Amino acid sequence: MILPNPKEAIHKAWLYRVLTAICDHQWISEQLAFKGGTASAMQGYLDRFSVDLDFDYLSDPSDMPRFRQELENIFDDLGLTIKDSSDAVPQYFLSYPQSKSQHGLRSTIKVDITFPAPKANIYEIIRLKEIDKIIKCQTIETMFANKLVAFIDRFEKNGSIAGRDLYDIHHYFLQGFGYNKQIINERRGIDDIKLFFKQLINFINKNVTQTIINQDLNTLLNRKKFQSIRKTIKNEVIVLLSDEIMRL
Image (cartoon, rainbow, N blue to C red; front, top):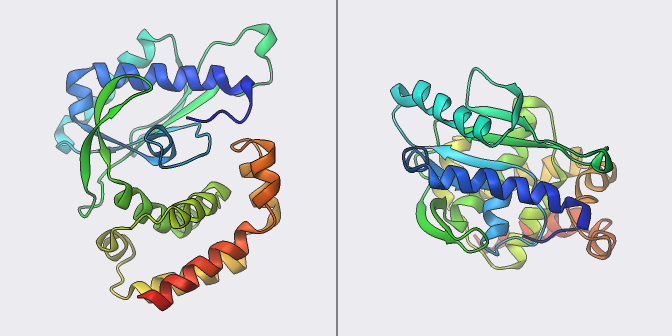
């Protein structure tokens, strides 16, 4: 995974430490599928830094109490402090130790686990070369479709907009990746994919500002990459979405 700044090496090391421990726990790893920006970047699908760990929970709901306890045991064994967590879903904000010289740097990892996962999601077994571990992951088509939906879904759920969603959509389109239409149908309750893309264009036009793009992407991309796309990425995504509507 690409580092935009050498100072992020500590955060990357802790991300990989947590992920390795999850992969090494046979029972926990069998309940999960890796997804999101870090999963995509580690497989070479995405060329930006990612700061969180995201998973789908695939097991029976009755196993959730044991799952939470086993996961929290992993965090404790690693010396991580749970700063905050959700009672509704397995979501944790974990603080890792910092030296005085690291004061002011990023020091929190979010571990976010979706439950229930969309039924249309497709998974495959992947070896993550950077940590030499095997885990079930969303396919790139699944990740792309969920990313397309996440832009609006994130806003509807908590009122937030992530500039990284815009960047990832832009990158996936330019790389020629396909997307799983059934996931869009399921998550948005809509059969007309063209209509969904029109809604997405309207949403981007109305809600995505230059400030949102700048604030979210300037720490995830190297300076040269960030400066080269920050003022054009919004219009380029709208063009790519419009082209997709014409293609359908």
